[in-house]
Length: 255
Length: 333
Ligand SMILES: Nc1ncnc2c1ncn2[C@@H]1O[C@H](COP(=O)(O)OP(=O)(O)OP(=O)(O)O)[C@@H](O)[C@H]1O
Ligand SMILES: [Mg+2]
Image (cartoon, rainbow over all chains, first blue to last red; front, side, top):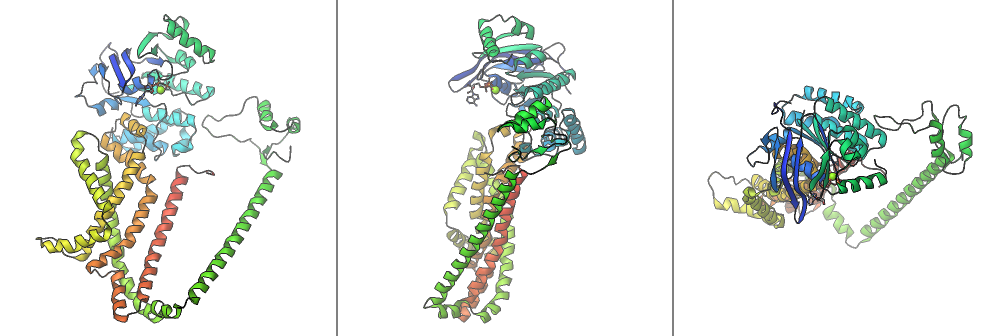
């Protein structure tokens, strides 16, 4: 957390972001503001573009139109140093994407050591401390293939946290977990938030979204159709389509 | 039920009797109802019962006895069939009309004794040539492979050059490549360029083998899932760091067996530099054969080359097996 944020301004701002893959328009016109130290949750049907939105925010996908600001700096400007931007954003992917040829500890210390020039001992100490906090202390030397889905998930969270990012993007981090572990990850997210982290997360776990978010955004048809506090969006959705989506979720027993 | 359930018999099995009596599939239900909810260790891994005393079930003992029996049977079959094959081969060879003559010209002990030290001497050159060429080939091959996978219009010339290089040298027979380099380069009479057949032969080997290795490494690079690059870039690694720390290690590791295969091949193809007159194992044997008109020296050289590649092949197998274990893959299939 090296940069000083623009006082009062949003940490992440998206304006009229458009993203297409060939003929399919995934994000049509997305506006989003994320205040510092808050949690924003993206909900929406499968394929509605939640992952794509997160990948755009991290410049892993190039947006077709619109602009994105991080800490008041436009990161979609072609002259920005994309690597420098990514250094300030941590990502936990839907499929974890741990490096299979490295142990958990090596996965976590790679970026601190190679990108941030932290010494080996210091990087490992920090990594072990984080692993301990997430209940993975004993697994530091294991290869990802030997961990359960939930353990891989938490290792990926630690890897993203280890670079001390300004913003953390979490893509369906509870997808592979049983209800008990969902509770644990929820605790982790709360913990991280208490430390002052700003997060944007995509999820299908409405309970999780309700518990942890300050802002919930419902994504449909390439736009954010509805946004508000969890109480408002879940309790009293303004849009008919939000109501229908939540209705289906309730039917499926996920709320 | 007791006979079929090979699970733990816990101390104080008060509640178990009822479950044991239940017809098939009662094991799971019993455990759940006993402990309320299945136990879990947040750090992962199943937690076995505390004071468990494991008693193998009859089913397991039966199964293992069957497996042992099967293993014994297949060993016996293998031994017998090997023996039969060996005897048949021996009879066929020894009964051949030309055998006594062949034995004289190919398997003469005295010539073998004479040839052995000389061929061995030559083999030392093969080994040194292999060691140097092997390292250069791996480096150059990787470089070419990386050049071929560079993205963006800026790199078009590099990509095109690398592609042309691999296409050309993969298609060119090694013996022609060596002839051109070993005889052609000295004929140019270039200032400061060596005419040493060993160096030129090595260069020819490197040219051809780097093309093979480049293709193997490129296949490895392309087999690394794009999400791995995405993960690396999202951590702030630059394109170069991503290649160096994430993509290449995975690509090379995956391609170790085919790479070592190429190395085995290179090892024996070092004998081809003899065409330029370099006195390596094959050439040493040639000299003796030419003088004595007895081919035993070739057999000696052949056996020495084989003896050299066998450890390499076993090493390949070992590395492959270790990589699999290491990555926690495996299982039955
Ligand atoms: N690289 C790509 N190339 C082409 N189409 C893509 C690509 N990535 C995503 N898409 C398409 O974009 C749409 C949105 O995908 P995205 O992964 O963002 O959905 P999602 O909301 O995260 O869904 P889920 O909840 O299932 O994870 C999908 O229709 C998908 O097929
Ligand atoms: Mg997704």
